[in-house]
Length: 283
Ligand code: COA
Ligand code: AMP
Image (cartoon, rainbow, N blue to C red; front, side, top):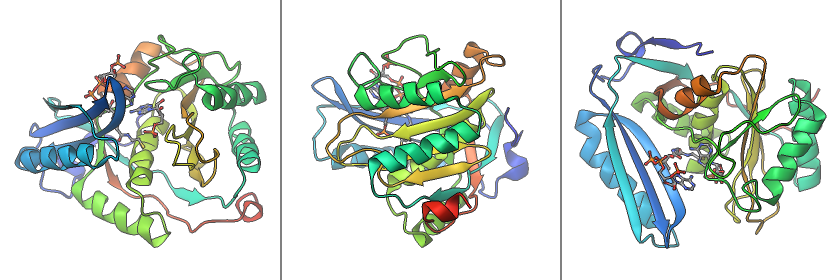
């Protein structure tokens, strides 16, 4: 469950006023195919600048979008979930088979069954939406491996999360200190932090569908964010996310609402450890 829930004005170091926060979400597509998306939660005074930054982000892609949507929504509630980011570590493994096997080992250690892990890896590796990449994440019974999302092509998308201004700066610096400079890592860490705090969530497994981006991770409250530089081969177009849940406790409506609409601000970075060799990680 949400462990860090509190009133925003009690815990933010940034001078944000309650009821003055906005969710800004950008998505860009080309010929109907999604090519990029990003989002922020900012105060009223940062709206114009943030819209510009997100537009710039959409235009920076090598593939130029022919359709860009930017949406703004006031975050009405005076209560936000304030969370500290998961701890992060990289396990240095340079081949995909070993990396997937170590990722499986971690998942099994924290309560995901062997069959669920196998189903998740097979689905991610071959296009979980009937041979194509999903538009969101799978929700999987951590014991049986049964898929529980209501639409197997869409899945569920996690939205309305961001770092506070102060935590954003700290996270950029702390991740840089351990050699992680790609904005994807910071964004994935934020997403994984929101996911790990979801009700009945056991663990997450992710690797990107971007053929040029081979890194992926296993994440949970217990393990933190465990990153692998090669969870898939370069030029492999398949990827996605799997959220493993404890089926005996899960309420899908509550879970969807949490992922899609409950706002989360991350106001602190967890422990950022330098990369470890597998033997040291498992010692
Ligand atoms: N892949 C494919 N299609 C997508 C998509 C994605 N990742 N995100 C949005 N779309 C398309 C879909 O057609 C979707 O319709 P659907 O709900 O039937 O699937 C449509 O756009 C509208 O999506 P919606 O989620 O309502 O848009 P939004 O403007 O509210 O938010 C995003 C869009 C991309 C900002 C949000 O979904 C998201 O992914 N936020 C997280 C971004 C992030 O930080 N990711 C980190 C990854 S490392
Ligand atoms: P990315 O990390 O952007 O490369 O996305 C990898 C995969 O994660 C996509 O193919 C989707 O299946 C899934 N995904 C993308 N955005 C989200 C999101 N906001 N929430 C959950 N899953 C997502």
